[in-house]
Figure 1 (cartoon, rainbow, N blue to C red):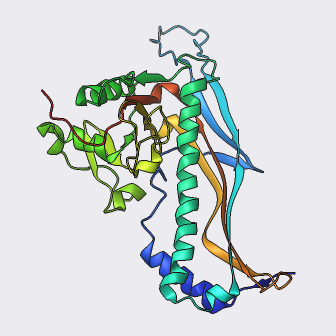
Figure 2: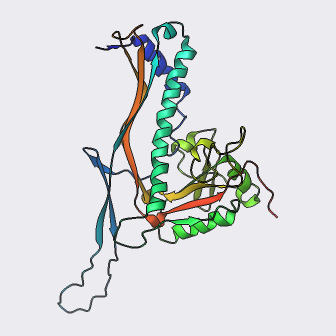
Figure 3: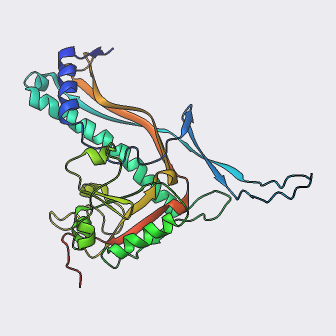
Length: 314
């Protein structure tokens, strides 16, 4: 048997977290296409092939029909949960700031998971490719990891994606040091962000963002770059990355990736457990969702050397 925690405790946390923590985490929300879901299965329709447009001859004859292909990319939502015990002896001693910190950390954790679901889906798509019947079925990788990022690399990826005829915005999250490197170029440092101002990352003051030739580039914390041989955690001492190795990140259009969160509980629920010694409280957050690659031509894996500081271009 469990009892709900005192309302004053829950509401105190919720009120402060919504105000103080509303711009934390969830950086990649709304950068991917939402799907149609039912009973945990999420589907994304894809139309391929060509539609033939023909000149009318004036004769009464059968029409020349086209046969576009309709495929369905499907994935299954998975459930995730975060939980933390709090002893009654502890929360009775806590002030508002300490109580807020508990909820804040739980909220940050579930928002980070919501982002990594999308990152893992892009990595799986770049590794395994597409199951669609029409070409292309593979994701290109720009760079081999031996060089630092350059504006020419950004232009190459942008041109390849835009050349497919997409009319969608392009998103490209990068580490802080990569942004420093690109800002060594005057034509880039003079750019402003001109994308959707309502996107989560666009509303965050701690995110540096620029729009270069239609590509919305923005920084994420180092822990988001956990892919590649020089990934977060491989550096020595307090250094996050191994600068002799590389990082992987991605550039994509909204239509190229699908993501759907069927439910998302950021506000920590708290229950008291009198059946346990001391009647501790259990705080929980959770979500159910999934992400999947849809159009391989609309995403590029960007692989360049990890950096901790910028280098002036020659």
